[in-house]
Structures are given as structure tokens and as C-alpha cells.
Length: 363
Image (tube, rainbow, N blue to C red):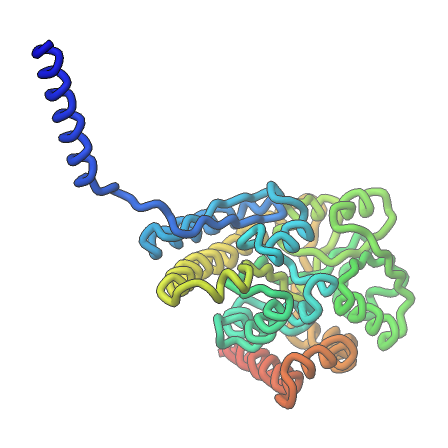
């Protein structure tokens, strides 16, 4: 009996010792205070690496307090489903195109002829300073989101199966594919009217462009350098003009309530991660564009049409952009920035940057 009691005492002392030791053990890594989801509704191989880097840097700069899980390729839903998930807060962050049915002021992000090259983009979309960044931030705030960083893909040109496009008159007799992007559609409607050309506009989904061109449903489209290769547009085109008439930019945003409630030190951690990732992505996309241009140049049967600044200006004037701004942008800008004459400020800044970049090229 005494042996049994003695054994129990020893076991009790051993368990107590183990418990006391466990109290002294400090975990090497504390559990994250915030667990976020970042949803990307498309397949974007060229940006995956840097968005993963952004997630890693947020965790690093926050000292492990924020964990961001990356869900690419539409794993969390379609574009609109992911957007509404972020708006509700079910999903923390997402990369979006601000279509006006989702973001009423979203047209400001890509008004035609606002940004024609990477140098202008660096100024107009600069964090907290660029005039387009400021307006787009207000647009996202209106729908309960905060802009974190931008992913840019470059400028759009015009491809044709029939003839090189060097002047507005070259559109005569062509069937041109357009989308539901109203400002972009207005550009070509105005060119038809002001250049007095007989061009038919056909609304076709982006995913159907290759088949539409190959079957002859349309013979002219707008496209980008990467799309000419990755989506094979260049295989069914004969000419591509570097018109550079509008800029493609997606916005990585976060639910605004989640953002507003975040402590300032963690906000700064996210900002720092965003600056690093965005800068790397900007330089990467700019570099990739040169590679894509060379790939397009080597396509069998493809002729690149290099337009001068003067030739682009002719298209720009025919687009009648002041009327498009008045119709589509001004009502929202006056509501979002009451008494600030924001449209006038934006147009003046865009024109200033346009001239500054062109002057720098001539030096």
C-alpha cells in the first residue's frame, strides 16, 4: 500500500513539474490576429508572383499579426461575386476592374486618352498623389472599399485584318469590335461621326475575340501587347497600330470597414508591402511589354504600325473627349468632389502630364 501511495506521489510531482515547465515555454510564433482572404477572379500568371510577395510582406511587416491567404484563378467566385464578397467583408481583399455597374465612379480609372504610356501612368496613378489615384480612391470609398495598390497591363492599340490603321479614315468600311465599356465605345462612335466613316460597331465578349476574328464576324479590334500573344489575337490579325488610346489598370482593394478599424501601425505595414509589390510589378510589366512587342513583331504575316505623336493626336481630337467627360464623368465628379471643379483639375493635370512626357521623349 505504501509503495502504491509513493508511486502516486512521484507521478503527481512529475505531472506538476511538466505543467510548470509548459508555462515557461513561449511559442516561437504568435497566432495571427487577422486572417485575410485575397481573391483574384481571373488567371493572371504575370502578377501571381508579386501578389504572393505582397501577402508575404504583409505578414512580415506586421510581425505576423496579419496573415493573407491568396486565392487566384476565381477560386472565390467570378469577378462580380468576388467584388460583392469584399463589399460585404466575407472576403477581405480583391483585384478588380471598376466597371460602372459596380463602381459608379469607376470610369475615371481608364478614361480614354488619359494615360498613353508607362511614364504618364507613373505620375497619374501615383499613390495618394496622382490625380487618377485620388479620384479612383473616392470611387471605391463610395462602395465601401479602400484602394491598396494598382496592377497595370499597359496601353491598348488597334488591330486589323484588312488594312493598317494610321488615320481615322482608315476605319472606313470596317466592322469594329467593342465592349460594354461605355467611354471606350463613345470614342469610336465619335470617330465615326467626326471622320465621316462608315464603320460598324459590334459588341462581342472579350473571350470570343479570337473566334470572331477567325470567322470574319469582325475584322478590327482593340487589344494589348500581351493579349496579342497570350490570347492569340495576333494570329488572326494582319496589322497592329500602337494607338495607345486607353490604359488598362486593375485595382487591389480592401473592405473599407476592415481597413478603417485596423491599427495605424498595421495600416503602415500594409502600405509598405503594397509599395514594394506595386513597384516591382510596374517594372516587371513595363519590361514584359518589350518582350511581347518582339514576339508580336515576329508573328508570321503581322505588320506593326508605329504611329507618331502627331498621328495619335488626330485620333485623340476625333474622339471628342471633352464631351465624353461631360456626359460620363462630370456628374459623378461633381457629386464626389462638390465645389472642387474636379473635372477641370483632372483634365488640366492629364494635359500637363501628356505634354511633359512628350517633351521628355524629344530631348
